[in-house]
Length: 324
Picture 1 (tube, rainbow, N blue to C red):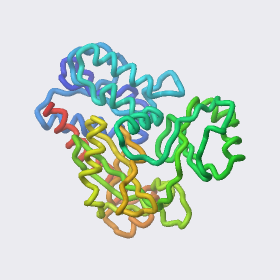
Picture 2 (picture 1 turned 180 degrees about the vertical axis):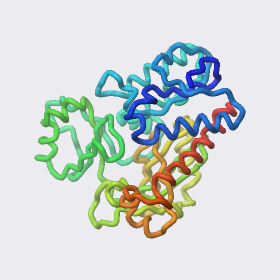
Picture 3 (picture 1 turned 90 degrees about the vertical axis):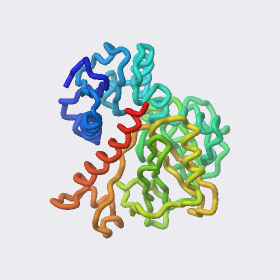
Picture 4 (picture 1 turned 45 degrees about the vertical axis):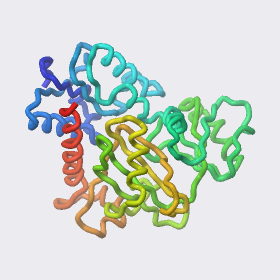
C-alpha cells in the first residue's frame, strides 16, 4: 500500500475506517488491485488523502459519500474538484471529470439526455424556491426526484396538489434541494438494469414489482429479479444510447411504457458508479430477492455471490484500463 512509484493509484481514503466497509467499495478496491497485479501492472492502494501529489499517473477511485469530508449537500462537487485538478496535472483519472458529473446529479443527467436525444419520460427541472407551482404542467400523480440522490432514496410519488405543496414547504426538503426533477409517472411494473463496460453489456437483470400498484422496483421493496430475459430487438438501440454519453462504464435503468416491449424504451437513469446484483443459485430466491439479500447462509449467500460478481465486473473494467 501507499507506493508513490506505482503507475496505477487506487485512491481509497478512509480505507481503514469502519464506514469504508459498508457498501461494496472495499471489494471494488481490492479486486481492481488484484486484477491489475495479475495483468502485470504496477499498482497500489493509496489510503492517504493527499492524492493531489500525483502527476502523470492513472488514478482510480469509486464514488461514495465518504469523499465528502466537509458535509456539503452537493457531495458530487468535491469529486468534480478532485478529478479536474488531477487531470490538470497530467493524470488519467477513472472516472474522469465528465463521468463524475453524471453521478447522482439528476439535473445534469437530464440536461445531457435532452442534448443527446436520449429518450426519457417527460421531465422538467424545477426551482424549489419558485413562488409558483403553476409552471408544472403535469397530470397527477407524478414523481419528484431529489437532485442529488440514488436508488429509491429521494424519490417521491405526488398524488395531488396538496401533497406537492406540502413537500415543497418542508424545511428539511428545502435544505437538501435547490432544484428537483419532476417527471411523468409512466405505468410500469418492471425495469431493466443494464451494466456496460466499454460499451459492452456485462450484466443485466429485470427488477419486477409483483404488486398491482406502482412502487419503486428496488430489490429492497420485495421485487422479483430476472437475470435471463433480455429485449434483444432493442439491444443495438440500447448500446447506441449508452455510446452517446461517451463514458467508459455505467449502468442504465430502462423501462417500457405499460411494460410493452414493442415500444421504444425510456432511459430512466444512468450512473457511472453502480452496485451489481448477483444471481442466486436457487430459483425460488429470485421471487423475493430482497429477503435473499438479508438472509444469512453458508452456501449460496448474497454476500458470497456479490464477491464473485464484483470480481468479474472489475476484471472486465481492468481490461479496459490497461488497453488505454
